[in-house]
Length: 488
Ligand code: NAP
Image (tube, rainbow, N blue to C red; front, side, top):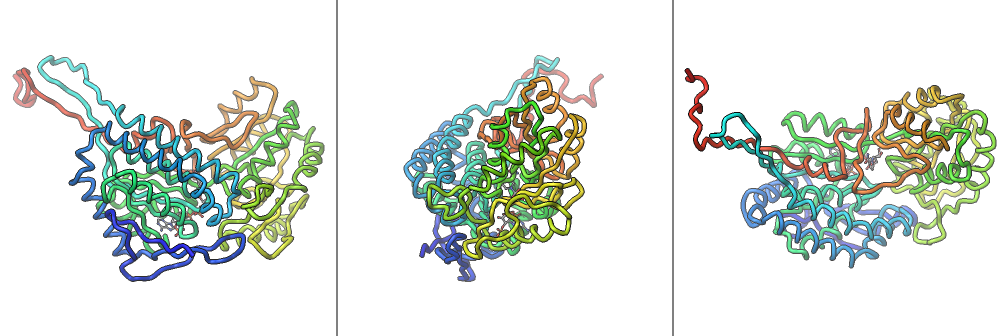
């Protein structure tokens, strides 16, 4: 049993209440780690530690170049810990070992990328009319960042937030999901070993329902970066607004994956399967609405069924497994309830739709056809391996169906016509469009949501600006008109 602690001000510590909670392996159902159940007083301790690290101490005295060097050292330490972190994450959230290993190998690259940006935060000199005034901008870190992450890709999402915040010169209080905190706490050991000063990175484990408001609303938190569901994101935004915090929200999706009749069907079938069944559908960008053009609808589904029915569902540690468990018990129950909802909606079940086993939080790949865009299974984010298939006549109808959703995170288009592809790119109301591919991601590409899918963006070079604020500096070094009111 792993026995972990909070990280506050460089000290590994229990919650002040002394309370702890268990983390469960979603495949075996076993409690395998215990964590401190932080309370509001612990939030205060962590934010105070981050705030004093930001205002005093060695952190604000480090040059941008030195911050970059620390991030590079961290990246190298993480590279050495890759397989351990991958195993922990698979144990904690049930993601396939192949995927967690890939993500763990990717973490160092994220930190190297933003390390390279630390010393490229440049201001500008403005060409004012008056030569006696030097007017310039400088960029300053916003301050203490509260970073809140979900359970589906804990390390990857935390790394993106930390790399930006630290390269910019901010300090961080990180709150991972109560269901999957272990890998984040273990990763934080690398920050200590890399030599980040105490208080620069703090980690609070506990329940969002108990400490979320206190963290988001804390007067010494300057920015909140949140990844999670729409209802929690809305709450975070409301609480943060009271004290005018800078906010970034990366929320859910109900993304359309659109296949035209001129597409390479072999590729598109694989793209549709990967789009919804990878990570058991627990990705924000899951292609959970498959839109098929009428003329290929039946043949496409035949081919898709032939491949999807043989997907291996099981132990995420077994490299042969293709679909692992649902990460949390409440989410498992929620996904399974959509089998009932789909029946009530009147959809036709082509594959899955009922539990094959009651153990291991395993949900079979499920495909519903004859779905209309008004059905709940077409409108709500299920966040599981459940696909809704809709059909369309032509481009106009595809665009209308695709955009008829409260979400706007991602979308896919499969076609041989680049003319059509670029038209779709322009018309789709989504932060990401993949053409003849699906579900690729890079820290170099902004991840941003339209409509209810979020606010602001993550990733990409420009994201570091979201952790900085400009300061305008006016210096009179020879102007005679420094008091405009009294100018004659
Ligand atoms: P969630 O329930 O909204 O939780 C996200 C985080 O918020 C967790 O750490 C949670 O802590 C915390 N939280 C709960 N209540 C809070 C409050 N009042 N104030 C502040 N924080 C609070 O989401 P989830 O179920 O973990 O994750 C799945 C969702 O994330 C899906 O909707 C998915 O689409 C979305 N997601 C989006 C992206 C993206 O980039 N757009 C990426 C990945 C996932 P507890 O766990 O302790 O409750």
